[in-house]
Length: 252
Image (cartoon, rainbow, N blue to C red; front, side):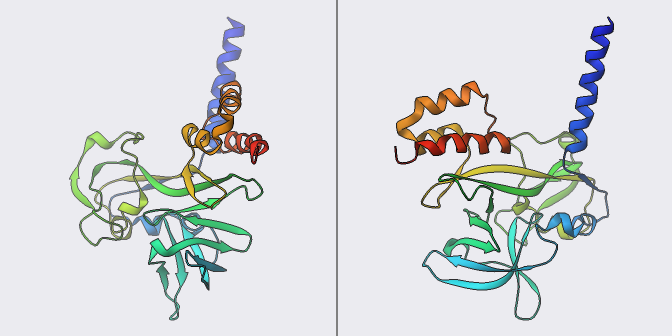
């Protein structure tokens, strides 16, 4: 009995330690504005806009003061009049460099932050502030930056629990919602998803099937590593270790 109690207390301690290490949860009450409640140092990657370079697919580049906004999921720059603007003509963009940091452009205005520049196949992360709970019905935008309605004000108790993977929200869909008073309670938290960047700087979702395609001649060795080490494709450390292992197979 005493042994069971000790194990139980240890499990409880680990549970609360892990919870304490999780990203902050932001609660926005009815009548509040999301962009006012969440601190700017959480909305942005950098405390201030940084000098960087915008690289285009045609090889051209432009210098700019840049910062990534996690709330809106967009790369922003300081315009000639000192106002904050989002990058447009996204399909012509290739990447953003700010100091030694690199952000690769993906489809639908998304950017992923490079984490492992030294590896042949690299790891990148998309980190946005996402809605994980709502007490009112959310209606997804028909397009990015649309000025149409993004929510309906009626209460929807079916959305009181955490979102699962099939209903996980995208900050890109709720721009208008974040800049006006909300009709009910919202909760947002920092969410991370991971991607592989191949040797041609193409971005792929970080999953087993993608990796096996990138290292097609060494599938069995990589599958054995994944099974032996119980790789979790949602854990950054697991993915870094996996890509370090896979690096030996480049050009073999």
